[in-house]
Image 1 (cartoon, rainbow, N blue to C red):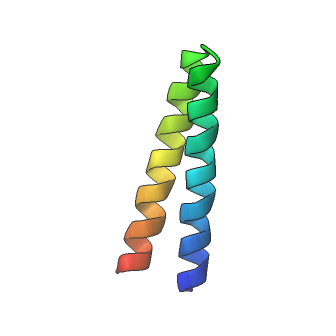
Image 2: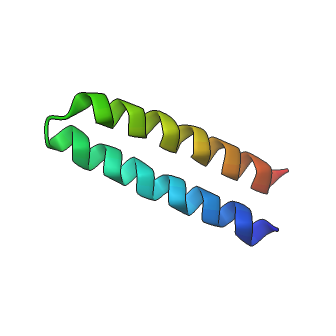
Image 3: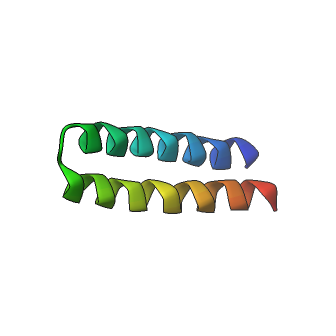
Length: 51
């Protein structure tokens, strides 16, 4: 189960990296959307892993 939550956190990190790339390409709307999804997923994955 712990590996599942870590995988969720790593996928969220990849989404945050995509948000950074969108931000650098001057596409702020998609960057904000991806940043919100990635941050929420990372908090959920790491929170579930730590409990």
